[in-house]
Image 1 (tube, one colour):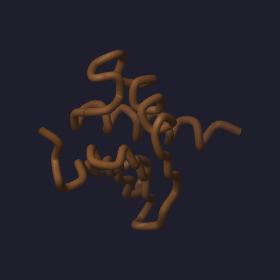
Image 2 (cartoon, helix red, strand yellow; image 1 turned 180 degrees about the vertical axis):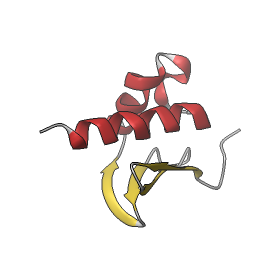
Image 3 (spheres, helix red, strand yellow; image 1 turned 60 degrees about the horizontal axis):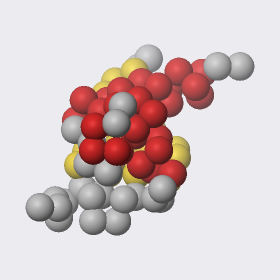
Image 4 (tube, helix red, strand yellow; image 1 turned 30 degrees about the vertical axis):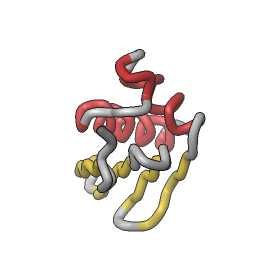
Length: 82
C-alpha cells in the first residue's frame, strides 16, 4: 500500500538543517536546506538517486528513513566538494 503522506527525514549536518521528502504516490524527491528547496527529482531520477545510496531494496521506489538519511549525507558531501 502506498503512503498518502510524504516520508520525511531531517538531520543537522555541519550546523545546517537538511531534510529529504519523498512521495510514494508521485515519486517526487525533494531536498531542503533550512526550508529552502535545494534539489528536486522526479522519476526515474528520484528512484536512481535513492537506489544509488540504498542499494536495490525496493529499487528506490519505497525508501526507508535510513535510505533517505543516507541520501542526505551523500548529497551534502557532494555539495561541499570543490
